[in-house]
Length: 133
Length: 62
Image (cartoon, rainbow over all chains, first blue to last red; front, side, top):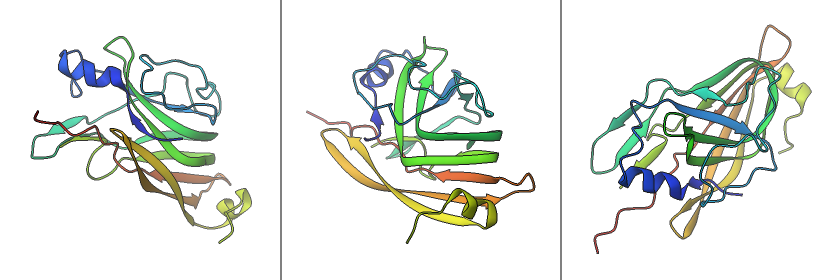
């Protein structure tokens, strides 16, 4: 298992299809049957967590999206969270809801991440979700 | 160290590190993902998953 950027996102950048600040960008959670495949193109409910236990299929929209221009330019957003949650997730997939659900990246949690009757938070890295050097 | 159980997480704060990989072009980089849990008033626990950034392949000047 691994994390990575989908080929579709690289093409979408070059073709001016995605706007990481203005578009509605969602993060969805997946089970252990999900595997990152760079050639996948669009969001799917296959292997996504079911709509139960505080999670709704389709995932949550990212808030506070911002691109910071520098030698290493990065894209960041506010941390994502699900409240009143009871579930187990293994992966997060980020996709562009505005751009026909095109995939952006898949993130491997390194194993099962559980929450019980609580808040599940993904704390994005201080250097952003994606960087371009 | 033994992995925290569901009951451990309901009883006390836990902090665990998981190993994962990030694809970077043709390479795979090893990264650590840190997960912290905190018991809550509902009898369960809150979870924070601290993620590494997800790099895109570096731009090449050919």
